[in-house]
Length: 208
Ligand SMILES: Cc1cc2nc3c(=O)[nH]c(=O)nc-3n(C[C@H](O)[C@H](O)[C@H](O)COP(=O)(O)O)c2cc1C
Image (cartoon, rainbow, N blue to C red; front, side, top):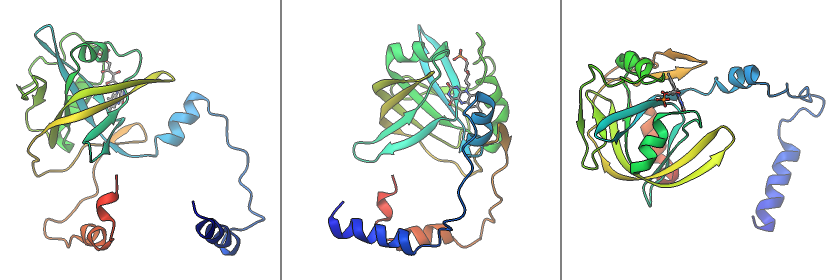
C-alpha cells in the first residue's frame, strides 16, 4: 500500500463513526459448538462433489465450495479428513461439482452421510471427464484436481474447471445455521437491481 493510501486509511479510521468507548467483549472461546453456531450464520449453497471409483459413481455433499479464480478458472472446496469418498475421487483426480436446487434436499441428505449406496435411484450422466452429473441440478462443472492442502481437520482442494454445464432456471438449495432453508423469493419480472449495481461498478468483473 502506498504512503498516501495508507495515510488516507488512517485518516478515515480516525474520522469514522467508531465509538472509542464501545469495546467488544472478549470473543467467546472457539469451542466446537460455538464455532458452529457463529459460523453457521454464513449462508451457502450446497453442492455434491462426484467422481468415479473403480467404475462406480461416488459423491458427497459439500457446502464448503466457492469459485476461486477466473483466469485460470479455478474452484475450491473442503472435504473433511474423515470422508471416505474424497480419497476415492482424489485417486482419479477428476470430479464433478453439482449445484443443488431448492427441490433437491433429499439428494443433499443422501449424499451428506457415509453410505455404500448413495447413487441408488439417482439419475446421472457422465461429463466429458467421466464424473457423474446429477439430473436436474441448478448448474454443474467438471474439474481436474490441481492442488490439495491440509488445513486442520479438512483438506483445501483447488481444482481447474474443464467443462461448464448448462444452468437451469430455479432456486438454489441454501444451508444456513445448520439447516436447509429457502432462498429469498424473487419475482420473475422484478427489476435486476443487483445486476445493474454490479455492472455500474467499474471493476465489476473483479469480484472473485
Ligand atoms: C448440507 C451438507 C453440507 C456438507 N458440507 C460438507 C463440506 O463442506 N465438507 C465435508 O467434508 N463434508 C460436508 N458434509 C458432510 C459430508 O457430505 C459427509 O461427511 C460425507 O457424505 C460422508 O460420506 P463419505 O464418508 O462417503 O465421504 C456436508 C453434509 C451436508 C448434508
